[in-house]
Amino acid sequence: MTAKRKKVVPLPELVIVTGMSGAGRSTAANVLEDLGWFVVDNLPPGLLPTLAELGGRTQGNVQRIAAVVDVRSRSFFADLTAAITELADRGNSPRIVFLEAADTTLVGRFEGVRRPHPLQGDGRVLDGIAREREMLRDLRANADIVIDTSALNVHQLSAKILQAFEEQGTVLRATLISFGYKYGLPVDSDLVADCRFLPNPHWVPELRPLTGRDPEVRDYVFAQAGAKEFVDSYMKVLDLIAEGYRREGKRYATIAVGCTGGKHRSVAVAEELARRLREEGVDTSVVHRDLGRE
Image (tube, rainbow, N blue to C red):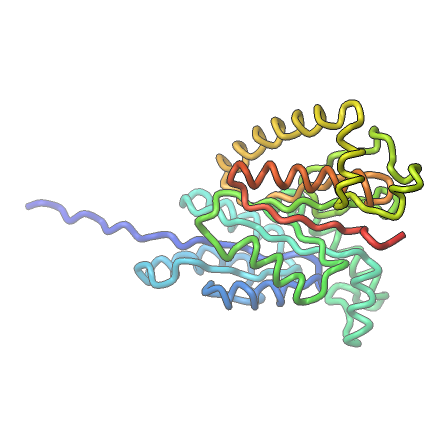
């Protein structure tokens, strides 16, 4: 008598949405739900393997699951680490989306809705934020996608989530962010390129009011010694990194390009890198974070 073969249970794609309280987890969950994901909010981390198993039992009817988890569970990290390990052993490693924001932004959001931070106890909102940030430090470091929502409204955050998830067939997506160092680094960047070694168009009177989007500034920047060589070399680095991302299943990369004020050099270089990436088939968008701030 021939033994019956055990039927292979299809594994659903699994995403964990987590991060700082007040940083936009609910907004991210709503967008994923609109995209057809099966979303479970406030799931105890220890139930992640059970959730994935239940999704597999639907015989393909539930192909994508997003679980929103937070630190309110006292055994949060022990349970989450064990759950991720168990899922990986089953060949179903989840992607982690981490939402974060600056302390001042989070304080303002909690004060705006007149609600306490879940970890503040008898202290201030800022005390709860500090505890949570410390608890989430390692998780943030291992996240596949980190999104800083400090300067984003609900619609802008929704657009970022859409960009990361709406087209599952896209091999790799990239966002180029130009910025000014005097305004701080973009905290959600995976890579940072520094253009401050190039002469600053700010000191050329006729170029000062223009931006790196204007042909005059672009031509000035790329006429400088080392500018073209820098972009050529950086593209080779990005090609190597992109191949590694693809091998690791990472689909989204944020590349920051900085100069002093984020108006001239970084804008021109970010636009050129984006143009070349698109030519290589990478779905690329550009954000000029600090234009108009001076």
